[in-house]
Length: 153
Image (cartoon, rainbow, N blue to C red; front, top):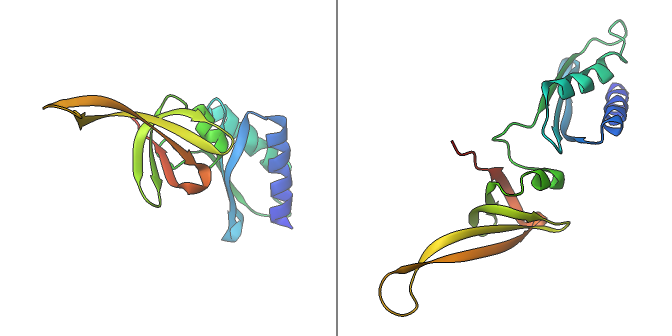
């Protein structure tokens, strides 16, 4: 019952702010509410406060004691939603599938798959030395075991 009420309030807040979307939602023992959100344009502290207030101001602490934590998906957290891929186009990703690991620039995030592009040095077909070859891979979302944005400094 409590979880349903919190979920309804959360859904209402996300309906009001369509640029934000849910990554994870859980309620642990002692009514510890934990919500992780992301946004098409990133997440600001104000966005977390908006979601927090939408829930907290509609629950009665006299009736139910709870703690509430609303946070954004961390920069190093794996991508879990198709919507997250779209906002990371032109960024370097490290994608792990069951059979391989690919590190490349995310150039497209379609409905069923992503496209990664990268360059490799390979031996020339004829003669000595190496040439730079452009590579491209299409990876279906269901084949992705883990995908992370590579943060470069």
